[in-house]
Image (cartoon, rainbow, N blue to C red):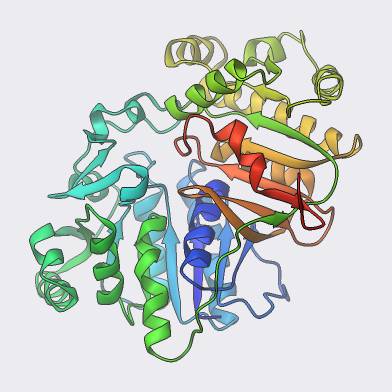
Length: 427
């Protein structure tokens, strides 16, 4: 193992795994903290997918450290802490506390924080995060039901989460090349800075930053920061170039779409799918709380509508509706009711011959994949930037597309199935 990564949610881990695979590393994704004796095989990179983004800080730190220790024990030469490209967190954490705990674990006095992912519309300039050309604080992320992001200044935002000093490596330094960035790292150390936000507005910037991070024990950021890391191992003669997969041989069986994200992107994908004739059923937290709908009833509906296009079950709603439901049920209970219901639906679908799952939303993906009993994933072809098809490793043979809520084109739910094949035949 060359690179070991700890990701704070499932879809983010899949996004990172795709990036590493596309850059030529044989990558596997492990679900939850690896148990003692877990066989990582001959992977160049291992990405551990946790569900730590919105749990209490001490829990996030504990499971991140356990995962990192397992990766280091298996030989990882460099660690990467991966979080969302929209920096999803609160003033209390969990990005800062986890980063500082991992810094202490590997014994480093400096790391970076760079969630930029230009291909998905995330860029950093003068320490400010932009999403689709808008400041983070003016983007739809300001209304996120769990982690509303209302401060685009990442230096200021991360400083509220950390004990150590947070600084900035600006775009001028990045555009001057890798040595310039290394010089900026040295200056930050001299100034007592522990974590530096690094500007990046294009892929070339991420590759420059990656080159500058050669030998750095710990890196933190979004999946984009991994773009430049495999080249370091290749230059050191430790990595051969591998071609990424173009299709995924998927097990025969029925297909379904499950969407729990309330992001603008996912809501648009739902609208496009319905307009394209995809059968759709909306499930709300209030219906679940009042006992007006059950997992068995949802499964019956899915089975009855699975002869044509893969049916869609979704809990997604606009911010006003989500806000009113949270006001009535409480934020945590509303989210948990939906997650538990969709997870139970996924589990029951296994018994009805469903082997192909497209799941939208990090929390939803984590809940459903856990219910399906999946503990590792092989990375397949890219559907859209940041979202690949994957195949389960061990347990039931499943094809899974795990989409971060904000990712994917408007026609994602319709076109994703074109990359699956069965016994080498498109279908």
